[in-house]
Image 1 (cartoon, rainbow, N blue to C red):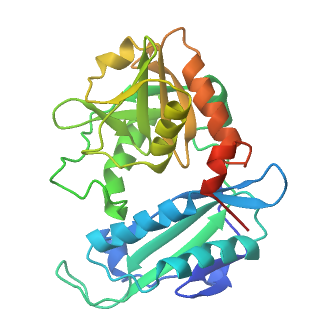
Image 2: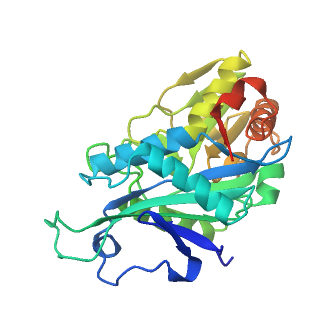
Length: 305
């Protein structure tokens, strides 16, 4: 898939897509220090576009930059308006939005602190991250040989560019082994998350999901918890091993890119009857309708443009 659009927002202005370039000696390109977000806008059921949980994503972006000790050159309101302006300029009602904060060209070395902090926002059309077939019928996952970061090795609550090398290697391994996605364990052997998704396991009507300790506090994860609570479905945040997935009735993964994706097989063992389960389909349906303005209590999270 080739990503393209008409315009990219860079350092305070909209510029043509082809002009959105950075210097080869940009610090983040070499060392990985920077923050980013993945956000989606959806065509609303009554027309026009709407960004789902834009405020929450931008707050996390600002927090991530702070944890990286990067001084954000733009405030929240400016970033929010920039996202909307970029969508309008590209005439997108439904799109993926990628704000990124990175260190530009200047000094090199690990101790450098005075390079310019640059901010870009790109938008493009992006369908189902794990495939339309995966959304409908579920994906196959395999336990990775790569361990998720130790809680004290990195900033787990921050969405940091360099963190994703760990995820990329696990995803490559999973795909090479014939799986759609990887399940990553923490250093104690408990299930952590996917390479870019949080995880939910369902057994006898009880929904379990790992605690936010050494995983990203996913925004779609929280939306899923809100849906479960609204529907009166019991859930608990707790550690569990991969064997919980083997005997689960249902498993699903969540993420802004992945949305709500069912899991039908783990380590070549079928989940339940090998099809998306009742609770999974309920959460998936409410989420899909909610981000498009069809669920009244979820409308508060949509920014129209």
